[in-house]
Length: 174
Ligand code: HEM
Image 1 (cartoon, helix red, strand yellow):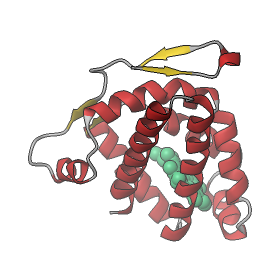
Image 2 (image 1 turned 180 degrees about the horizontal axis):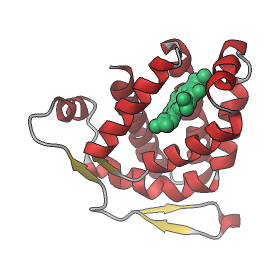
Image 3 (image 1 turned 135 degrees about the vertical axis):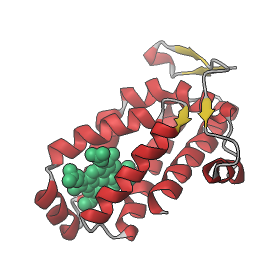
């Protein structure tokens, strides 16, 4: 299966099977959460294959993301009280790349628990966290639509991305 980037970027990308990995013990509740949304290792293969596409557009995604946060003064205040836009931009870039590693293991779960703890500590209302996620999703979808001219590939990519973002929200908002 090939995901082919637009001609002008002169890249063709092979989707490698068997890279995606779910390393969660059987019987763990998170495993059932994955099953409920149908997030499989095939989806994680796709997620991993998308990582270079995300990497190439990281600045655009993150700039758009923070531009939208800046429209809400209460969020700007939270950021200035606890961090800075520049620091969070670099945190978010790192986080996005990790999100597209194609691996879900204990470390992945623990990191989301820490993110949840931090956002509770800074008093971030859930509605703004959800809104921020939607913004990320829309940016990523527009990149995929632009970069993946093959309809089936683009469809698989969007499905896989919505699953991984949904899973992350399940973990953070629990
Ligand atoms: C910290 C991700 C939404 C404000 C973080 C960290 C991550 C992260 C990965 C670093 C956690 C760590 O150090 O281990 C996300 C994601 C979001 C989101 C994926 C939704 C898409 C927001 C929103 C705000 C926000 C809407 C608005 C105020 C902060 C602040 C910190 C932080 C201020 C730093 C806290 C500190 O260093 O004490 N976020 N975040 N986040 N986030 Fe978010």
